[in-house]
Image 1 (cartoon, rainbow, N blue to C red):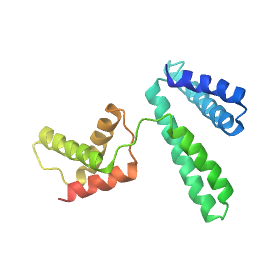
Image 2 (image 1 turned 120 degrees about the vertical axis):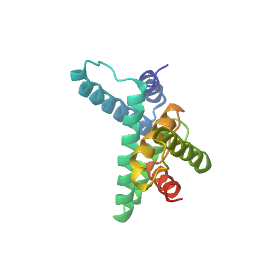
Image 3 (image 1 turned 180 degrees about the horizontal axis):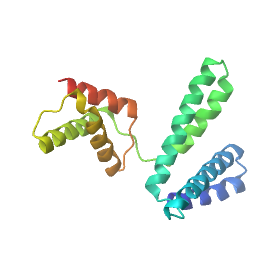
Image 4 (image 1 turned 90 degrees about the vertical axis):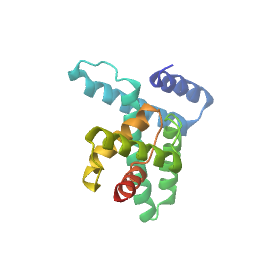
Length: 160
């Protein structure tokens, strides 16, 4: 069952159960998904694949995290709690988060892969290439990782 089908089925179940917060979040996800589908039409795609749906969900989580920070700074804990509940629900549809140790292993493998392909030891100037390789490996393994943490680990590994 695709993510799109899961959203639709869970929306129906949520409406029947009378859960307004869950229903609202699922409607928001489906609306964003429809916008993403419409944006992909010029490329000849009617419905975006699940990997693009996951990218959309990551963007939704990122914007909500920024909102939580702003609400907390503005002393609006009730709005921050609402946004955090939406984040938790959206993340439930995303792949499992990678632990720091596992992420370090992925980053080291990306550095080794770049070194093998270029024949030179990567330097901090190669940060973009290593980040790209690490992100590809994370996505290929159907995992999820915080971009800031990946960046910190890549910087640390390249500084060695």
